[in-house]
Image 1 (cartoon, rainbow, N blue to C red):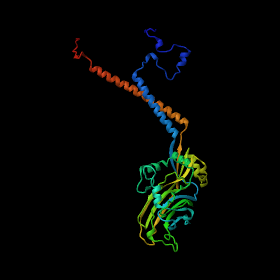
Image 2: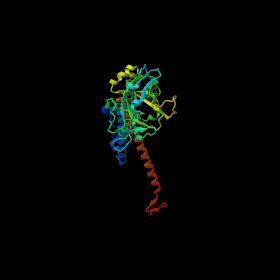
Image 3: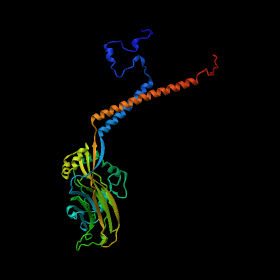
Image 4: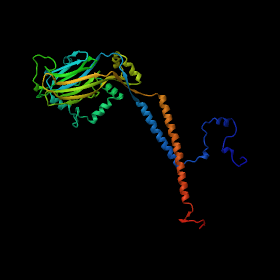
Length: 399
């Protein structure tokens, strides 16, 4: 006890070596005798712990999944070849069709000799491929109709995780088998499918009728037999990844007119999907040889995305107009790098500590503020009830 009748032990430690060492405590603690647990304090503690847990799990999930970054760059090196993958059914017999590629370099490729042709039935493809087995849901869509499911599937095919997963899961790059002809099926259509190499320049891939567009002596067809209705199962550029959905994949265009022209304008953007730091993808854009070596890296996929606009209309029946299906493509001089990156573990720990500290400090402020508000409200209520005894107002005299 000191001269004022107070116990010094209640306010500090006595002099000594241990007491001196405790002066280095940067966060002095309040004596247990000066604190009293309350129900409201316990509730605030539970709330703060729940918030810390939720935010910590969110940070962990974000770190584990990584962040997706998009970066445009000028394509390095000199490209020479561009692979075209096609699987299309045209409502005309194979002997009546001519398939060619003509590019800006002036080269003409007889694509009909490089691609495979298969006689088939239009009705057979409509029955077997236009509808799924269950529910009668349209698997193929017309260009004028886009359902929500198709848009969602195309949206998934622009994310690194989904693209790498589909490529690994579907290692085969073969074209699927078509439906077999049944007894009584009318052979009135042609399936054209396969891959071919062309020059990596602006070009025009077209399917026309025999004797139209190019000189084909003695093989002019009657215009009444033309029908360029078609069903596109696959149209892609670059390495063939059949599981990725492109804008023209699984689309149908039909017409009742014989002299009809379909035109598709395609803008191709080379794209690299990479799991890891963007520098991993950058090293594959230095030259075409590096892009070929990319096939051995399971965490990097090179492909080509494209945007397409279409125009179709009936044309006059004269030699100056050529009916058919025309794909005019142009390669953009840029490359899109889509990389999925994950931050360092040290950075994750710093964010977790900052998150927990921020929640604790904010929770403490809110707890003190709520306590002050409760105290103010209690005082106001006490003032209003002052002088009221047994339901009667006191005028300074005790009853």
